[in-house]
Amino acid sequence: MKIAGLVLVLLVALEHVYFLYLEMFLWTRPKGLRIFGNTAERAEASKVLAANQGLYNGFLAAGLLWGLIYPAAAAGVHIQMFFLACVVVAGIYGGLTVKMRIMYLQSGPALLGLLALLLA
Image (tube, rainbow, N blue to C red; front, top):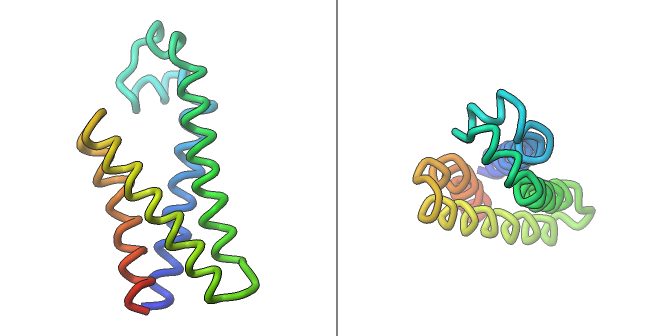
């Protein structure tokens, strides 16, 4: 379970680096428009908000990666669990307020990682 937890933490961190990239750099480009179902006008009007959201996703990724490399292993696991819990809450909120798919894509892997760490 320990290895599964570490792999899931890394997966969630990489997922959030990708979210950062999408929201900060591709929001107004064709791929970003397609992924988020935006028009060029809506994307242009909301690009600052999207970049801010992307930055927060980067902070979540940074926290998870920090937990993975933290020199005191027990404390590192606690750091990972905190940031995974933040991801779960963010995914639930996104699922309830934007699109249900967000809950599965964001909260699902984070919840599995959290459970794996708790069971390890």
